[in-house]
Image (cartoon, rainbow, N blue to C red):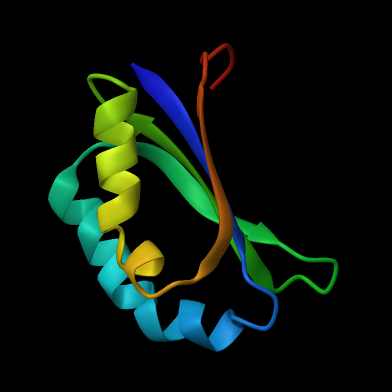
Length: 90
């Protein structure tokens, strides 16, 4: 099941993102459920959130993955949304 994980960083949290980026990328590599991912950008082109497509069994698995992401554990996000997603192009 493909689910979109859409996360918005807290205002002023760019340093928190940078400090935890290596751990976040390692988590992605170690878990093997991320089909595609990348940062959301603000109007200045700085990282301000995350968009990930997870290929997991169900929504509960996506919620668990999101809760264990080093970014989430560091308190980076102001909000997180998990929504079913359908691949059409790409």
